[in-house]
Image (cartoon, rainbow, N blue to C red; front, side, top):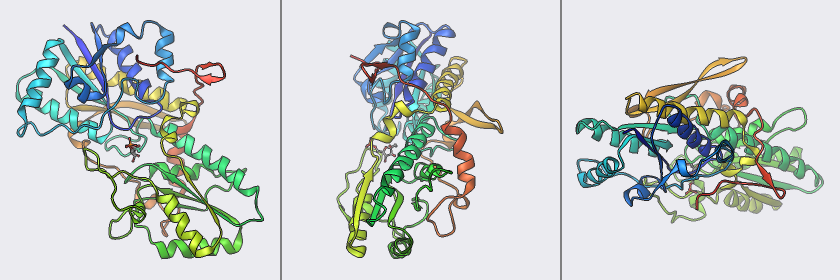
Length: 407
Ligand code: F6P
């Protein structure tokens, strides 16, 4: 018996299904009998909601369409596994179900919180002498996982953000005689990698954003308004990129000044959103000019029509590596993406101990942020540019992208 199960968890991305395809294809190549998918991650698995992926991915065409379908094909969850000492019954149930379906390998595609699930299950398995192997495949648009140069999902989201910034800046200059402040709000919670990607819009044909604020540096409202005031003396239209997670030196998120009662998920993460609208209202009051809040929101993590081919390929390879490691008997690991060459860019897929990854957040290094904390340096641009390369065209039908959907 050599059955595999795979799940997807946390916020999705436009290439998370390419990782799923990588797990499926490599598992089959290596002789796995059945490859099950858990619907809505570990939460669905606890309710015994499984699908046999072999019955869905019957041909190469379906696998290709899966790779180009955004968001989590199997459905996702934000479910925190309790500690095994506190609630052993949850682990007993999971292992009983794994044994019932004769599963030898458990792959979880996700971010830091999902790697926490892998760590707990692998440790419990080792402590109880189980032969089931648990390995993670990285995924997060936030790019905040430790032990890896970057994460699948980031390159495509970065490409989308930089494209949107470029296009919005073109739109902005149309009314160069009217004063307008644009604030573009970008995801990433405590890590500013995605917001920094707005800088990639800069080039010969585009000045890029005027100001970029990451959550790594406490946000100073007075300094911000001073900068905007100075810019307005020089030009009429200003584009500002801000992370949804910018906060002041007391740790209060700027979006909390607009609405203090932010909901919290199972991992204690506050629901973000509203930063751009709030900053626009402050600017409107201070400068008496028109403002526009641009919330990229969900769009930045599901824009598969603008995915980076590099990202699609690396997502596939990392899924393949994870299942390969687990099928060879290794456990408590996550597949990692290592930059093996700069010019030309080359990426090698490796493995790292999940204990160094779960619940750790890898932030943008301070030296990649300008001294004033309102821009990023060329080092960031050099780092991110290779990750957005290559076009992954969707499968089109009736003028629209066609997706593979689980019924
Ligand atoms: O973890 C990825 C992420 O996209 C974060 O950048 C963002 O804060 C969060 O998920 C939003 O999650 P959701 O909209 O699923 O609650």
